[in-house]
Length: 420
Image (cartoon, rainbow, N blue to C red; front, side):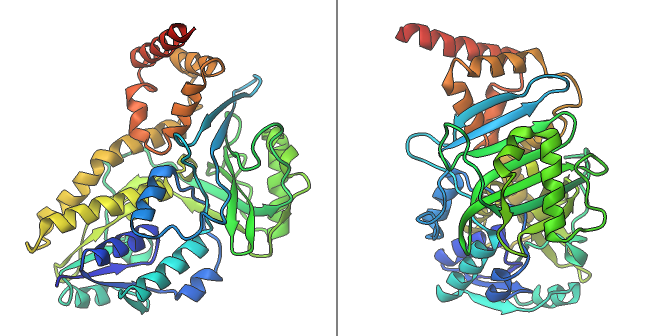
């Protein structure tokens, strides 16, 4: 039985661990936090689980919460152009009865870690150094690193040939009660916004240990108007500043949260990110090799909303590569090849992230404005736009290129004319 070590108990690492365990591998997860420490720790940046990622979780029996979580069947995007009225676009998050959820990472990772151990996986609660990894490389057939910070993260050099547009970002977030509903819409609709004058917002119904609430995320470039946290304010002060920013840059959002209150004293965070792509193979001091996974090697702007989608798909892709590899050695060719296989999906997602990050750097293209205008008449355009978050490579077939966009618009209009 092949022995595999996964370093880190995050989303991608635990998803891969469960998949490997189901295929009969001897799997060990080593993490610096116990499930209790994860469950009671600081919040993380809120992520959204889109329908396909939710399907993949169900395949591994990892969907424990959708009976309690608010189900987002619709999402609305607000665009705040410079010197003009805001534009709103609405669409369904999935086809048929499929839906999207957002679960507090603390619940999700703690439950997954406990379930992994209950299912026969080995869990070691301990910090890990490079010296430890050197030692472990003689004990395991493969080591997958799911920790992107510190000396372990430093194993993976930046790969500027794949992505050179690193733009440092800041995120402020709050989990809140007493949010007013979107007038005329479902109670559980998700909202997202992009402003020309400031940053971006994601505002979703959210499941915490204490039950449903809402999570509000503000993201901006470093030094931008929404980078208002240099003194690391206490939770209540951070929430006050967040409300002030919404009042100024996104009034519709402010109106929904003007009377909202923090869930508890552990409901806010401020984090800094630098989007980048790294080389997937890390070399240990002894010459041993390790494989980086998900956001260890591809870190995107959090506003893109691809964190859990990306982690799930990367873990699933690596699982396929490992299983198909059989009993052959996990050499450098395999490690590089496993990442290249995932990069076929990751590259279009990176292009999507690049578009989101540079959205207001120039005037919106004419075809883009035509799509936004047509979405008011043809709901399927809004649906496809929103459902692209589930599978961003679809945008390449209709959104980016003017000719493809206009061909799609003509196709939609012809279909409507044919039904009249």
